[in-house]
Image 1 (tube, rainbow, N blue to C red):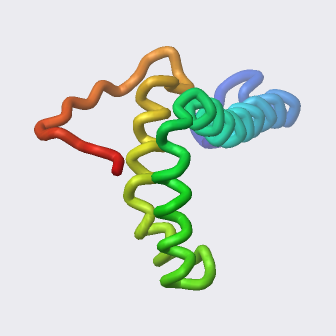
Image 2 (cartoon, one colour):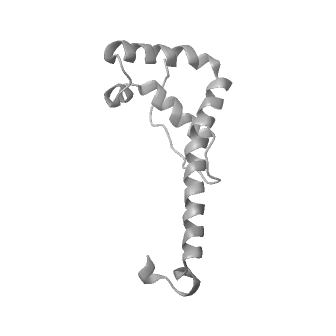
Image 3 (spheres, one colour):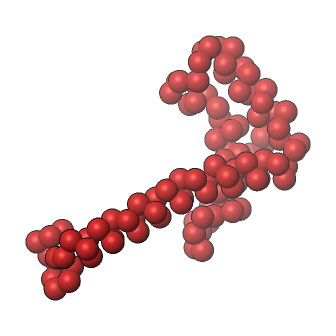
Length: 105
């Protein structure tokens, strides 16, 4: 990165400013995503029982929430994807098309 920098881009103040901006953007999106999912969940209480049931089933099978257990949360994954689809963090969003019906139950 420094090899291609020119002018003020080489200065430590400029580089630190860019690093702070990138860090802020990363923290903002990391914090905003779970908040959006929680808001989406509260707005759709009809899904709460189904998702909690899936969590209980996975916890009964694994005892802890580890990587393998997280991979079993298929309904939760679909719900989170749907939340991000309807409430994107960016102004532009990716549009997906379903080729078949998907039901969360």
